[in-house]
Image (cartoon, rainbow, N blue to C red):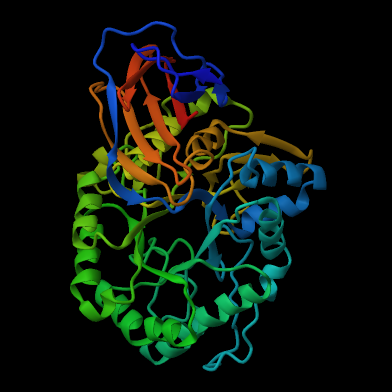
Length: 484
């Protein structure tokens, strides 16, 4: 641990610096510079406070759980400890799916008997094979526990107008049944010892071009379901589960949904916030849209619930790929011409680091990655919608590859803890991305991201003291300030 020094040689603070870089550093402890810099510092302003932080983490999908159950006990423990122990990422905010999703082995729901309006045949038996055992193992490892946010991709087909897993709408005559479905799910998981912190009404209510499980809502339809059925049902049962709306991309639709959700006073009363995804661009985190949402309802949460390197298969034990431009997302081929510019090739590590910092600096309260574990193909996935995860496994050889994306997530999740408050700063370095928070234990945590090809020397001022440091090219650093 290095001692912070200032021009007055004060030693009132302790400072730790950890770096992950393209050169091979993986949360490596870095010494401060032992000389002052004749440059304007980044000034941290603890007295300027913004949103509180719910946490950071990834998703328990059936794909992830299935793979972990196929690994040896030793390797499964290694992965879960890497994600959930205090020595590892210490994930604090996670997500899972209600019924099946694209990262399931097949289509399934918890109530498959037609017209079972009272859900007498409701059962989460499907999840008892892999998903629930893995969540329980993670909870045993996590000392502080973690929050779980659950999202449905679709209702059972018999409740929908097209009787299909893909697309279609929930029939109005089943609104009451579908609201009861959420309650049954939450209570069933509670009975397994797994508390559900929050739910979203629907994953991607705008649809996914019918490529996998989906169900369409307009903002008005979602409001009607929430204010007349789901919201009152949650309230009547006494459940404290958070309720989030929207749950799709951060673009113009986000502002339209925020208007609809928060301009309807009856619906607004039941929403605890709004959920967003990152797939509208490979580089733009849409600060204007996020700030607009916050201005509409500053007391409500904004949770980033899904992000991944999509439309790519993982590169096995090839750290270099994750640090260099060449990844392409769905929009490279599918985006309409007027949005093609939002989907250029990108550097996977840069996309994660830049997006998380950008979200934090624009009122987002929590950030959740997608699958925690996938195989070398980027699955299993019944829809063949291959993606990348921070941890890749080969079940045949019982091998584990912890990609650079894991370390990027850890720079935030390990050091920025639930209840932290984002604080102000002035950053004079245009090429450097920066954010800062104050944890409940009083520590100040700053994250610095240098995407350039050059080493940067910079100084940071906190409470009238200044520290000088160097950050490598293509590198991210977490800096922890603690009072002695």
